Length: 458
Length: 152
Ligand SMILES: [Zn+2]
Ligand SMILES: [Zn+2]
Image (cartoon, rainbow over all chains, first blue to last red):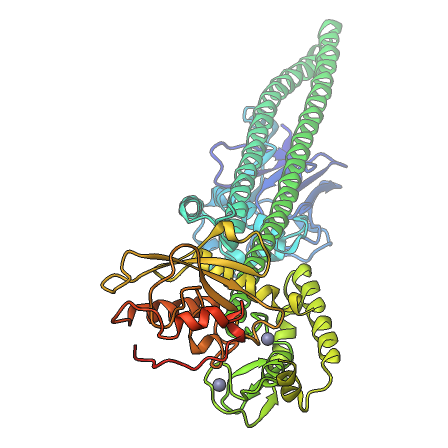
């Protein structure tokens, strides 16, 4: 009776087995390319390899993050570690993780090295290709969302996020918030209340709210997409599992038949049996070939789907960015329009006040060379001079005797500044007015005793 | 040009009379056609001797307006019978000559005239009416007024 050393996953529902043939390398890890795929973020992409040399079984840690423990002792990385029957091998056990100790075996990746007769083994199913951990899967879902956020913040690829993941698990209350389903529904609420908020007269949602609104709607799309991605992964993993289970069953059946015929052939040495043996062997190799083919196809399908979804994700992110820029632009425009409006209004107001307060009562113009009398009444220099040439040297407003007149530079400057803000037509008019006055002043350049002259003329 | 200079001032006065005239006053739109002058309809105030009567005042603005007063006379068939108003429409009012100030306007002149009419206690012509209208110039501004008692 031939005996065979094999591996069995502890905590699995069925007693599945996996043996290592001489020269064969059985790899364990998270990525799809491994012989045994361990579906957990605590497992590195390429984590461990088991091989047989001269009847001895060895395991090697491929510089994984969380390492390999043999009988609770962590083995050195990158060095072949010999295993013996009865050894318990654990793959991907995070250091210093309190929760780990309380996990069921089925949520960890613990394998025992066992030995049994080949005939017994053949009655049992071969070890499944994918091993899951309920704990890992749950965490994994959160991780996907987490990484989504992280990526959004830092624009880094997910490729190797191992250190962050450990942090997240060990310190769940770090500044990074895990998004659970509750959070998502909260966000829905937020969006609703924001939609009810008052709108800017120009039809633009107010500032931050608008950006938040856009961000949230696209963000929700993203979250949905990521969920979809995750579901697809699970589905294809399940499908693969089914496919493989079926193959394994057929393989086992063939193998046991093969074994039977081998023994028969040994005992009887008859050609008929030998023929059948050859046929069965061919069938087996065909089956293996078929299996490889199907697996390849499945992998390709998954990769294609993932790529498709990733493209869509990127598209959404781009869209989100564009929307954000657009919203900011709109916000800026609205703010500028409002400011312009306010300025226009202020200008109008100032001009109106100016017209009222800074008008010369004699000519009804804004003061030209404002001149203030001793009684505090102000006129244009031209206007008051024109009046004072008359015999009555009194203020036109209060009839107080004029004893002094002073030029008011402040008023002049203020009026000039105000006029610079007015329409070009008004500015042109003002220019004309000033030139007119200058000319008129030059024409009447004999102020000392005009009164008597005029009297005589009368 | 002085005409240019007063343009805005006269325009503003016309606008004020047109848009927000004081009670009892109305700018005659058809009088706006000739530049430098316009007519204002004046109503005698209620409760006075001139209540219900309407008169027309003609304003003529000279080149030196507003340094010089405008020429203001009653025109038309209705000339109020008043001790300061001659039958030819000339008005003896100090702000129209000696007491003129460029701070005054057509509106304030109208108000003064209405107030002058309102304060009248007896409808009669000035005592020198007959002599005055024979000798005066067409322009009342050329008259050297001997101002009548203000309390008429
Ligand atoms: Zn002036
Ligand atoms: Zn004064």
